[in-house]
Length: 200
Ligand code: NI
View 1 (cartoon, helix red, strand yellow):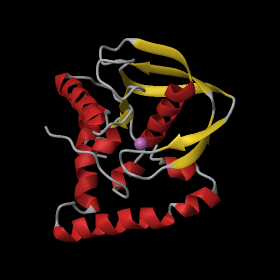
View 2: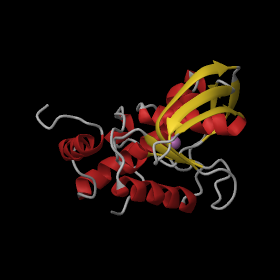
View 3: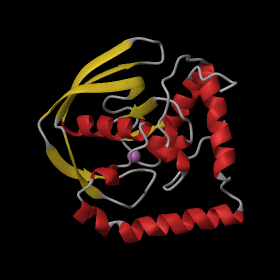
């Protein structure tokens, strides 16, 4: 399977992803492919719904460089114990070229699983804490600009409208499916990996 990064306003970016109940070789291959994409695009994190997969999984490496730093693959990640507050600039591979100031807790505690089912428990601070919060937001259908102040958000209105125009023109040209087809494909993934019942 060849994954590609979807751009705003693709509907899967607004989908709240369901927890993973089953990890198989295909999912492990997909996570490896997500890391490849992340590094190729000079990103520091990538959530599964950014490659149109509606499951709670993200990959991250705060250095953005393969072979350096700490490469993370997190399944069913959760954070708690937020402490402090810090504003810093963020960008996103689903809205390339757009940046804005986002205020977030400075430190959080992460709980997740790796692809072998081992528990991950870590106290995170600094840039990595921000990256992980940004990726978990994706899994809940939240984009970083949703968390900006109204004033800074307004500065992005123009650039985000350009993304919307581009998306609509791709849809008219047939290179992006309609919402129903996208939802149906998401549903098949949810049946395969999140325990969604086929008859619901
Ligand atoms: Ni992002």
